[in-house]
Length: 281
Image 1: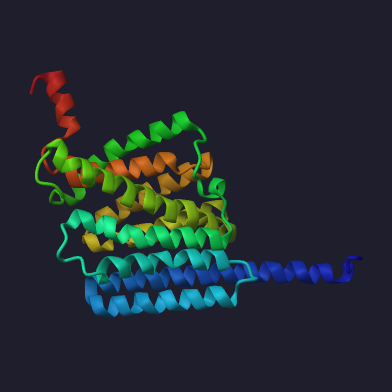
Image 2: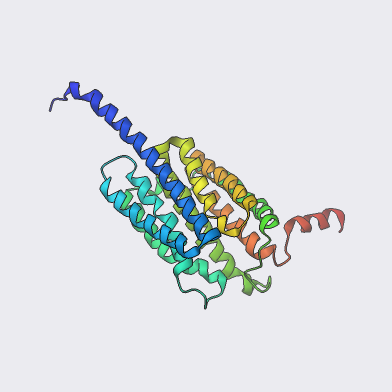
């Protein structure tokens, strides 16, 4: 088979144009998702959910219509942003303790993630399910201790358990580790960042996903927390990009939430314990 040399420049130019179009489409959806989240949490929840539902359907159709073009993998991964919000606010969870909300919502998310990853053809190594740079991953995991303390100072949420007794906290701790730490890192740093980098480049993809991840924290009602989460998401994204693994960031994320929602609200603050050990206070 002979290559038609005369058509090569047009193909290259067309590919560049399609990539540029994919970038603008991705940015447009980011703005729309941010608007839906603000509308849901700060204006009128029902209108916000309607917008999220509309975006979810639009993303599915847009993915199908552009399947052979650059950017379709990012569009499919973006469906998880409205899906997370629709599941968290639409499921009948009022009769369950709040800690179990994370578990219940994570089940359909894990199933959807498995289907999406298979559909997108992303390998285990691409999404970061590996033990690369293991010593560094453990150091990254330990940052969760400081991140959890800092975010608690910002939000000061009520505890999700009644006491620090082992039988009271081990299940909530495991839920936060797996259903928030691992699940969210698998979706955002594993799948979404991988597909965003394909369209926006390494730096652009990391920033893009960090913005979207931060926007999904608007519901806490704290601009300081949104900015804090954005910074953490940039850090997590860089770690995943450099090491190729989500092990460390998943553990750090889970540990952050364990300190934020369990141990520190119940009075166990390791910074205070260190101070008492060093200064006898």
